[in-house]
Image (tube, rainbow, N blue to C red; front, top):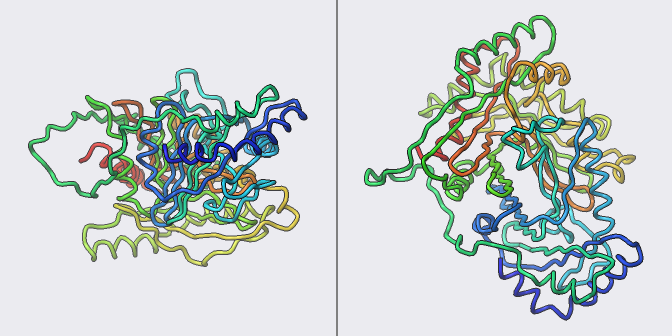
Length: 494
């Protein structure tokens, strides 16, 4: 990351002009402003930079199959919101923030923030972050208290890499009392990093076994006995039979303890190699980490074009070609799995109908194949209606969709009420929306599935199963075990 500051030092004199303009704006308005400097840089593996980012806030996002990765280090501004209108409130705060942010391109002065359809072409910095599953404040004793109930941050340093194109942004606060020299000094000052973390990140899906390596001692404990989870599934089925709701997603967790701190760099490296079609993401605050390898896009918005997907219905992959084909056929033909999938698909279409009209997608779901598990998936696309193109951003669409029946239930209000009374799980950011957005309100949020909360030698892994009419309690328990294995194996190297 020192490369950025070397570039800025070389352009120090050129920074005086945008610094002077921004100081003048701060004095004229009587309120703080922000100045962001953008520089082109060479493409790089951002995981090493993320792991070496010192203490405090850091954000990492990678989609291996698309060649896209994002990094945010440090925190200048925090946008937090609670309650039923939290996404709309956050969207309004984002617009207010960007109103007071100026951008200077080291190759070209940008009079206003212009953000392209592709995040790798963005002229201004991205806001990064996520939100908890529920819209209520966290309990004081919650394991999630370091991350809070959800937030978006304006990072001090942001990096975007797409294929061979990359840029960095350095942003600083500008107060009415500041001088031009103050601002230039801030822009050129290095952000705290741990330069020792520079090793190549790599992990084979099946690392060679070495019986001379002791390895850490691991203890794994479910948050509730299997019989209790089976009883909760039965209670959910009784509620469905009574007409309370059509579907509810019942989650559980595993507590994992080791006798030494987890190797999080290797863990993240494993996740992105094992699940290249997923988005591997990590959010860090001090010693607390939230990590996910999620296959599910909640929604993306770029130049008025909306993309989302219904992902629901699961089956194992199989240990041979014939077994794989059998599991796939059963999944595609299963009335129960198709019902669960259709509930999610219809809910998404209805939730976005006011903003987009109708969404387009294939009539039949396709198979989304991941390591050890496969799902039914229907990609859906649409366009914002003309009347909303200048009004709505991606956060407004997140608010319309979250939580989808794929992670909560349907109808949403009754399913969530049942979960709060019966699930007995502090979900935190599990199954919440995590992502990024730009000055135009464009961006992408993922559903944080296959996720873990980690601190030192302690981790908690999360997974859920969708319960609908016809669900079998033992099969739903087996589905959660399959999903939990997705993170447990690479975390513990078993």
